[in-house]
Length: 406
Ligand SMILES: Cc1ncc(COP(=O)(O)O)c(C=O)c1O
Image (cartoon, rainbow, N blue to C red; front, side):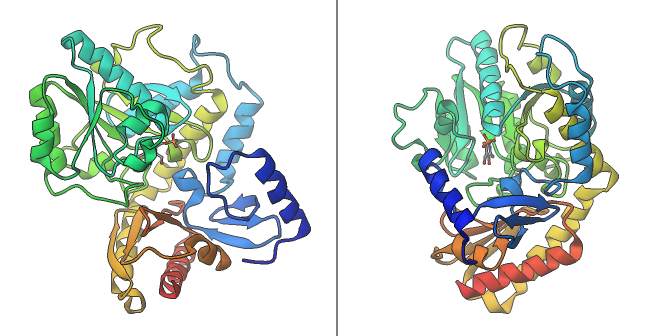
């Protein structure tokens, strides 16, 4: 890493005093961003291949998103959700166009969107059967940090110390359909699944699994909730991760509820629970809410994200670039000894190392590269999906060199 200046060091010292230490922060003060680059307070430039943990789907300070935000900022910020506003309606219309017919509830994060989905599942379940309020999720899953979502998350470390768990959440082994079918008794109201597991390490479900889960939900009158917080908005080469899964007629396997976060705000706080009309109808006046959810600025930016991705055909582009990248990473002789497997779909790529690396972030930042390490040894790359092609190829070369150097 470059030498930190006095100003940077002073900011870090001040930050250590006043910011809670729940994030493993690097000793870098980021100051500005443009496209796929960010600069620190010392003027060092970094290629950001993990823009805002997936939030920066169109990179930093995209001019059309800046224009949407500033235009709306001068018009109407928020008026409270007892009124209609155009940006909210237009955003929900885009979900109808690109996902399926449904209705939207707006909040500020992925965890909140999942909370809303699980509340809705309980509401429905409680109407059907006295105890039909359990939510089943999978091992290695991640659904957020609220009390209920840590109970839903299939990673015991996330729950540790926060016991007792919120009741009504249970995990079954990812990929094991028989275990899931066995767990779905009459007390289960919903199954909550990421179409591709993100924090768990870019994990795919076995062939045919999602189709069987959909069928199981239909047979046992259980809601299927897809947590698309990572996989939504074109990240995986389709608008939404569930669109990769098809039935025998080629139709996408749709959930009853889809949750969105991260990319759908482009870096602003936006979360969405999007439900099929019949299910959404249960959430009548007073049943759920969020004071600032769907505020004008976030909704206008989110609407524009959909428009830019659609106009620039960025989903197809991400699919092609991702496929080429995975093939290249699999063929790189210089890292073959270190890599256990390469997994990816669209611009959502995981490189599983054989051994957990040391000082991974420090080494990446020293090279001017922002990437991520999850589940101890899985290098994750999730650049803005509009990243310049040549820059992306150069960045992949940097990732290869980084891994080779570990
Ligand atoms: C699949 C998934 N769901 C939910 C969340 C929680 O989102 P947020 O941090 O916006 O609450 C995350 C965050 O990483 C996630 O990956």
